[in-house]
Image (cartoon, rainbow, N blue to C red; front, side, top):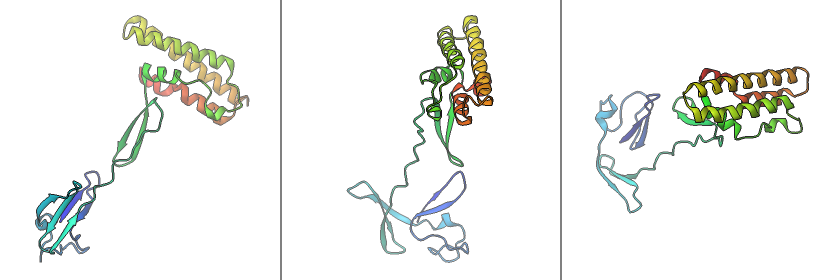
Length: 195
């Protein structure tokens, strides 16, 4: 028998051979209650297609193992997120922070799909464009005083753009979905934390 143990949950899956009975005993040997004692696949080889083949002498059979499913692709198509797989929760899409996050957001127009037919308030667009310009300056200047000053100014502009977006939504000049999409692209909370 060949078993696979999931590290995250401790679940044991039988890949080849007969699985353990629910009572805890293993059918491959009498009186065995510790499944690793009963692994008896003596002969392993690969077939012409490079698949693993196991000779199970106790049961007088040959079994071919199927490869496990490949890990899921977590690419959400958003260049502004880092996509990873968490074994316990699945796909995790973490927005880029810092200057990289702003630069990435600036590569996209400030007109999310949720705003179709709704014009972005001009002042929000101007503040966003100014913040994008400051992001380029901050990226070039790095950690110097000039770079830190550009970073502070771009954060100020993004916070102002967020306030103006909230104000436009409150006055019903923007739908709630559109305002939420703009605020998500502005990314003010995650950027403030990444200083």
